[in-house]
Each structure stands twice: as C-alpha cells, then as structure tokens.
Image 1 (cartoon, one colour):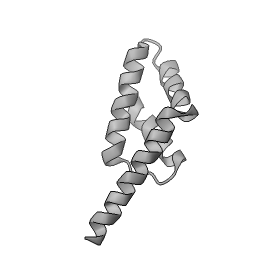
Image 2 (cartoon, helix red, strand yellow):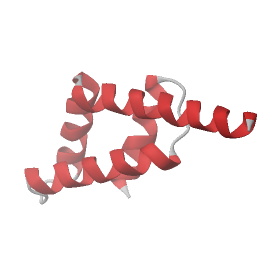
Image 3 (cartoon, one colour):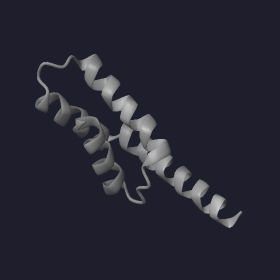
Image 4 (cartoon, one colour):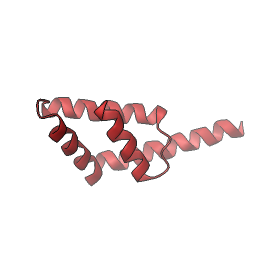
Length: 79
C-alpha cells in the first residue's frame, strides 16, 4: 500500500508540474522550439504534439522538478 501511495503522489506531483509548464512561459518556449525545428508543421500540429506529450507525461514521466518535466516533454515531442 505504501508503494502505491508513493507512486500516486509522484504521479500527482508530475501532473501538477506538467500543468504549470503547459500553462506558463516554459510551455510557450517549448512550443516555439518545436515550431522552429519543424517549420513544415502547422500550429495545430505543434499544439497536438504538445498535448499528446502532456497526456503521456501524466502516466510515464516521473519528473520531480520543473526542469525534469520540461526536458521530458521536449524529448517526447521531438519524437
């Protein structure tokens, strides 16, 4: 039970970090970086990739800091 609670807490922390990143300057920076790397992608495609990465992060990322969450999102979007 303790392991499950710990995992749940980690997931909740990660989700909060991802929400902060997505809604703030880091989210805008990340979208801009992706758009610059993929000039052929439309804004909608960049946003779709960003949202998909955010959804995956909620289940797979175990970032404990904003920097870890940002790095995970950047790597996931670039895939």
